[in-house]
Length: 346
Image 1 (tube, rainbow, N blue to C red):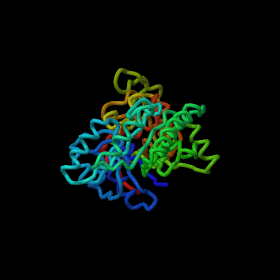
Image 2: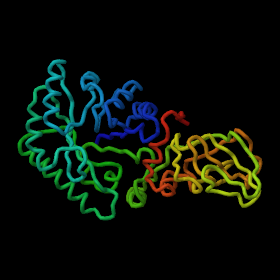
Image 3: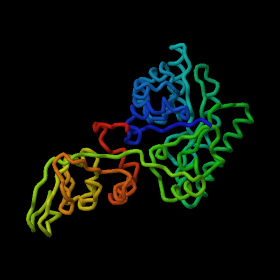
Image 4: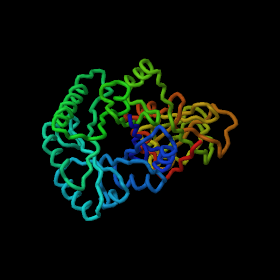
């Protein structure tokens, strides 16, 4: 089975160039999947020489994909005909994977219409149709019936293609959850997205992975900053915009140069916590564009420049914890961390 690491959206916030290098050096990784051609070219320029699949948008000249031998996802016959003409002029083949919409109603050829479309694509002279895939809507749900219905639509199409001797080398439908839950849908290619970075999509996914396969995903990212100012406030002092917090005791606060511009969710105002000297401390007042305020009254010997852990594998600051506090999902927590913040491999 070919293992494809999904590195779209700046590798789920973990830095696409960094993840590209790690995947290039890993003998277990065969493919990299990204959303746009722009991302694919970043991966190439970062030294990733293995196969790349663009899952979505061709936001640059498609000739670049052909010249760099980057596979692209197709779902529109007119586009593929034009792609064939471009490849013919370049005297090269364009490598494509056709995406099948089996129920997500997002990108893809509707399953019931796909057979005729694929037959036409398969016969184009400068198109190498080397992949066919679908994507699950709710593979992490307790009720598996809709996922199994999607899988049935997909396998029915595959069987019909086989009867017509249309052989497509790579077949894939499993995302991270599908890899763990549905052995029948692995085919010969699997795509691991959030699971790569230790992000469980749901408690169901986590419990099943741990019980069925003894899989314990480890959170890949820690997000850290440093204290830029410390000050003492008397009882009855308002903190941050709109006076949403007032000190109820003599309070020592630390100002941290991180805010919603950096990707620290504004909904964590008066809810979030951070760790300083391995002790948790609450975020007080509104999260600002570039700063947050922390109550450090109960932490001894704190100094300007001390490290602050905003996200990591500690109670209250995991991506799941921050997602729950901010009314979001863990994928959004990591992908929204500003790409300009340096990522360091340790």
